[in-house]
Image 1 (cartoon, rainbow, N blue to C red):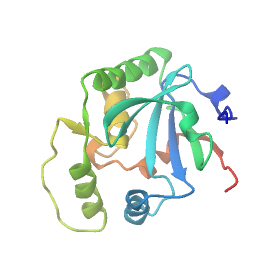
Image 2 (image 1 turned 90 degrees about the horizontal axis):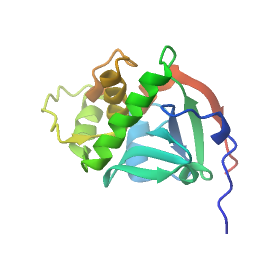
Image 3 (image 1 turned 45 degrees about the vertical axis):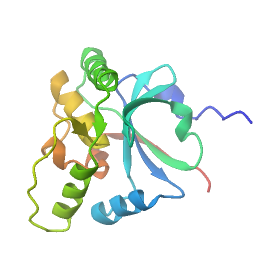
Image 4 (image 1 turned 180 degrees about the horizontal axis):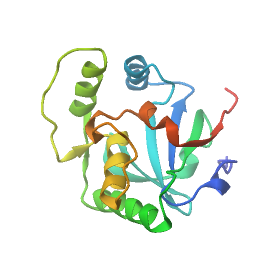
Length: 172
């Protein structure tokens, strides 16, 4: 069975990012929802063509955009004020992290969750790792654009909602 082309693919520009909300969330996604109070549990950057670059359990990796064609609600996000040069540089940074096999920051996500519920947890971040929203924020910082007022290692997917340009809800 062929995966349908997402209706939102045509509106994407390289450097845009997707906020995703799975219809059948894993335990991990449920915990992110609990800690943030938001439906958005993941961020993936559009690299162009039909390719995303994102932080998943295997690290910063390339994935086909069709991964989110079914079973997810999607918010397409675009950074206002970002030029094509900024967007290209942010994508290049994400690609570089994928090439260097940057790992996923599970402990950093736990630390973020604990801080969100008011626990004074101030463990230090392991810099060889990144989680999804942190990677997108840092990529744009390196490209010269601040997309969050929070430090990158404190940004959850929900914190990037001010960049939403369209939301696509798919039937369950």
